[in-house]
Amino acid sequence: MIEYERITGETVSALKPFFQLYACGICDNTVGAVYQWRDIYVSYYAIVKDMLCIRAGYGAYGECYTVPLGSGDLSAAFEANEEDAKRRGIPLRYCVVPRCMMPLLEARYAGRMEVESIRDWADYVYDAEAFRTFSGKAYHGQKNHVNRFYREHPDAEAVLVSDEETERACLGFLDRFRAAHPELSPLEQNEWNGARDLLLHREALGQTAVALRAGGEIVAMAIGESKDDMLFEHVEKAMPDAAGAYPAMAQAFVRAFPAAKYLNREDDGGDPGLRYSKMNYKPAELKEKFLVTIRDASESSATEGSKPMKKPILLIMAAGMGSRFGGPKQIEPIDEHDHVILDFSVFDAIRAGFEKVVLIIKKEMEQDFEERVGRRIRPHVQLEYAFQSLDKLPEGYAIPDGRVKPWGTAHAILCAKEHLDAPFAVLNADDFYGADAYKKIYDFLCEAHDESEYAMVGYQLGNTLSDFGSVARGVCEIGGDGKLVSLTERLKIEKRDGAAAFTEDDGATYTPLALDTLVSMNLFGLQRSVLDAFEARFPAFLDENLPKNPMKCEYLLPRVLDAMMREGKISIKVLETTARWHGITNRPDLPILKEAIRRMKDEGQYPEELWK
Image 1 (cartoon, rainbow, N blue to C red):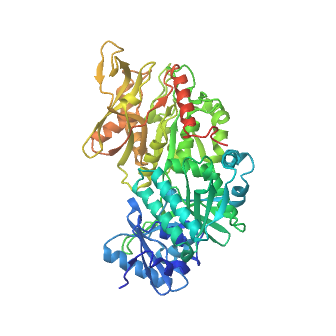
Image 2: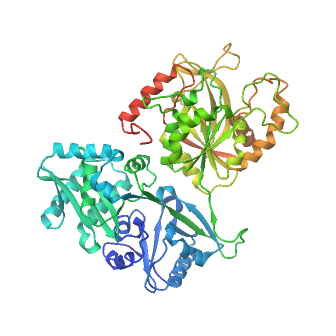
Image 3: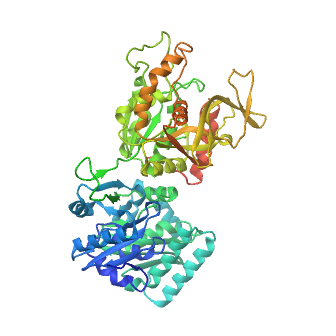
């Protein structure tokens, strides 16, 4: 039986030779990254017939193995992992698997693999020369920051940490950095500890440390290593009061490696702010990494080979008439660069991990959408149009004479059925949800769920009201398990006397609602099974409602989901957020939204121009 041992400062140097053999350009196959994160991942290792096996904890994915490294007996290494997983009673999973190592798994586990691409694990790889110069329009912002740093610190210089005096100065810098950030999370504290350890053991681990000195003290530091033409940056820290120090440090670090063609700055771990920062440096490539779960050999498989999980899709509903707003609000500019809400929605979705967007519109609006939005975002994401039309009805049904109103949100989703071959998030085009909402719903959809398990992002009612008229909201009742008990659509909710209330009789009477009531903003995470359910229920809806309200009855998403919940067909997990909703339900909402966008840009949540 092979025993796995903890990776520590005393044992890690023996592992170093294995990482030089098969890097695949990912940070996880470097000794620096494995050593830096050994405690947060609780990493273990075993050397089996000249092969390195590693077992580590990957958060929600549990304990996983990495593909063995080395030039020895790969089969023996796989057997060691298999026996260890069986003995520990855990699933046999391989984490952070780069594409170039997938053939090794396929050769051993053909027909037994379930493969999922994990966006949060993807490494950001940049053109090294671009960092050395920060030239061109794409790096205009970074260059300005670097220029400011050297302008404010004219004596600043980059120094190689190669002697005890500079090392002590760098340790002092890390202490000052820690003091300037008194409330670090456990992950951030571990990162700080890892940076200190890498600095102290850099020679034994083959690491290079570069620092920026200004005013007689260290104000920034970076640590990394190189393999072939790839430079890996494991640590980059700068004092918060040294404006421009981060891009200046990144540039100085790359300049210390003149032979490097590429720079790997590791993954973002799913942090929205870090993802925005890394994307802002214009990566040349995102190194995709996979979670591979190995089924038992006794399990039957419907198909031979691996079973990849398709990535979640973002479905945006933009076919509404905008009657209260007085026009096509989905393409109304909300800043001085003619961005519309859709620009920000797709920008946040890409940061969260979505790679495909389906836009539900009216056919007659296709040209306007393509000119105003589509051609801007198409280079950054797979974009498809689906068309909601009144004549998309079950066989035997006809459009009532005089009806022009769309059939509602559940019908809109049915109109996009042919575009949806994976779990999907669905939302409104005229609602500004915020980056946190996209991240939460994307992560939910990436997890393994039963076809009956759905989710929705819940907002506090007080954060979603308009100052200029009524709004429609799905009012939530939530159980102790965090799942939705009921979802009731209230079509006219208004602010009244510092509180909220809804009316169902055109204002004759009002029923109060607490401002902290959780409501749906029509941001749901759904499985494909919902499409068949919506299709099956649509005729009954028409039979019941057409005789009563042929001109305005709507097949609404919240109401259908609520009915399915009450029947025990589905469950909906509520992903709570305290974010504030912004939108343009009514024309006077527009200047308020514009002001909010300006404020978020000034705070650094979004770049001035999203797609440049």
